[in-house]
Length: 255
Image 1 (cartoon, helix red, strand yellow):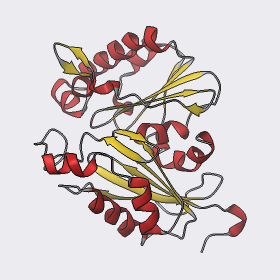
Image 2: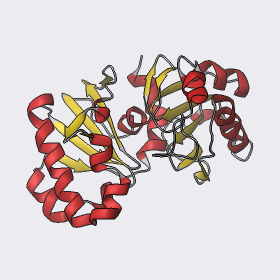
Image 3: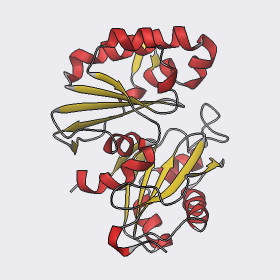
Image 4: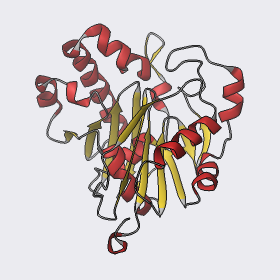
């Protein structure tokens, strides 16, 4: 049972295209259980995601509130669009119209809150990731490299409105998501893929005029040292665990 002196305890859930991770943290961001992970089940209507989260929660310590990070455009806990969960069997498989309808306008925050009987915060997964690493000073951009490319923008520690610019074309009609995502990393190898990372970051520099950039997600550690050195000191690689740890701090950055 959690120690009440370190409350509130947060169930933090990081929902990705390939896997879902969850753990419980105290107010200081200390894990009270090793993060559990299950493969993301497909096809995945909203109810199945909620039940997957509930099943994971049963094997974790008690909690007072819930933070969920998931891919896509999320506004006030409501899904505007999500790229992976509308597919038959995961990223880059066939899109199912019935899942597009099921997810569009779905109040995931309300569904999770009702199922787990705890106050819930649902954000884009890159926003939760960023909440675990930003300094709270100036304009800070978070880029997450995994199945695709995620992003979140912070101004003075506050989360700015989310933009799904990763779905915009970057080259010959290819989106940022396709250009820099996991399939291309596997095809190109880390060295050539890292050069693409550099082109993306440098191309975004005049758009955001950031004070600092954080590169996270499961593939950030694969960016070569040579590319990181050329990107400069204001570009920092952060651990993928931030997607869990950020579940605590996200509550203060959205107030």
